[in-house]
Amino acid sequence: MFVTVLADGYTICKDAAGVAGNIFALGLFVSPIPTFRRIIRNQSTEQFSGLPYVYALLNCLITMWYGTSLVSSGNLMVMTVNSMGALFQLAYIILFITYTDKDKKIRMLGLLLADFSLFAIIVACSLQIKDTEIRRIVVGSLSCCSLISMSASPLFIINLVIRTKSVEFMPFYLSLSTFLMNASFFLYGVFNRDLFIYVPNSIGTILGIVQLVLYFYYKPRRDSKEPLIASYA
Image (cartoon, rainbow, N blue to C red; front, side):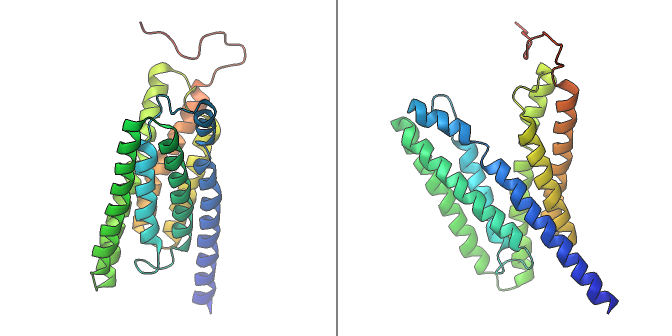
């Protein structure tokens, strides 16, 4: 009886963490919308790069595949959040291709094709692995490496904030959403006893904390008249 109650409690906590992670992830997925409003308004991608969206799409596809019942068990929330993420990234890529110049169109189309081709290869090869535990380990390792590399992406912003002593390029709500999403899926992975989920998200949680600490340390005071970015020329 006690074991059943404990198991039910774990399931409820896991599902709650997963739902929270999906909600906080939405904040991250919609964050590029102002950028694309500008692109649509100006009918040009200007100096913006489409590579982050291409890489984010591949990350979402791989992790979405890991979350399916064909690969792992009890990771429905992982599948839903990455399905949602894949749709957002695909929409951004399509908009980028629509408004960029001809050379970039060809390159972006090639990268998009490469994304889906690599994903198809991963799916096809993993389905050839009959042992379900080995399949989970192989796909989980790929997903974990991809998530860690994505989690490490804020290192550039962290370095920029420390170097310029400015949080101009690190929006508070984006940093907060990143922290909350990673923290939620860290707990989700812990409750599901899935190291391929909690390990990369623990790294993301730590980096999220660092971002928030830096924000409050470097945020401009109301009475400060110094420029946001100091000149080092």
